[in-house]
Length: 147
Image (cartoon, rainbow, N blue to C red; front, side, top):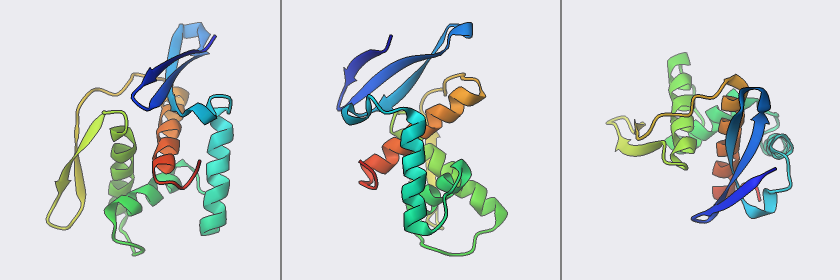
């Protein structure tokens, strides 16, 4: 059974995923996506990104794109460490949509910094991935990239 409750303008869907551990996962979704499976919405995002950029990125690639978008510097060469920093910016940005992080401002080089406001859920690996996917989908909805 799926429980739904209104929170501001977003709906929270409680979806029992792992009955063996009696755990529930909270997914953020909008009314129009209640019937669509998370993985279907994720695949649609990846296809749309392929149409736009010519590649169908995996999770790391999508986080990298979000990080570049949030940095606002456009296309350039990044070191391995900078790529990791961009992915961290992306994770903090998408999780800030649920109040896990808040932007504190930019450093002297223009890189954004975040403060963690509350602990992240203690999900197992697949739950963490789905939690992050759902936040990424919400980010792209807010950017008007997807419906």
